[in-house]
Image (cartoon, rainbow, N blue to C red; front, side):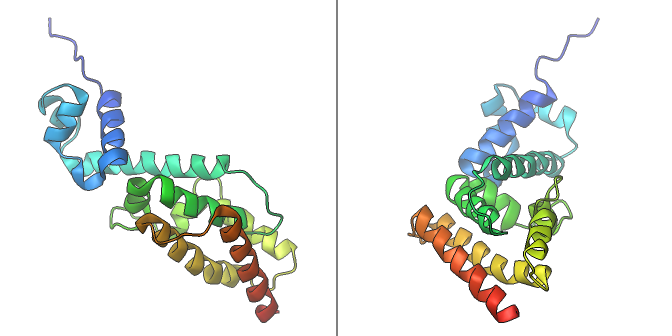
Length: 185
């Protein structure tokens, strides 16, 4: 009778996600993961062919974590893209390592940034529809224009260079939204 495995895939994945969240995905090595999980490297490689396969699973969990973060972010603005932008900037500030993995690395599991933002729930699609409902003639173009600012702000938040308070950042996003919609007609 063989011995039952005491280290499960769930335990390894939980440890890998926690290690990535604390130190960054570059630090998720078999040795560090084994220490964090409390096992040798053998169970890791019994479950995963290589570390890239494990990072792929961590990536999927990170994307779901981001989507849940955005869904839980308070919805305060009646204007499209504002709450999503504010959630994205806060996420970059609070979850630096996950943000880097999702939005600033080549580890995207074949997904574009748009697909990541849109998520399983169609977040961006809903915001584009809201903009269209508000009379924006080309809401996709508006999204791209405002998103460049939002992503830049999030990158600045990641590095500690974004020093606006949340109300100031929200007001700036609202101003940008209004300026773009005015110019676009």
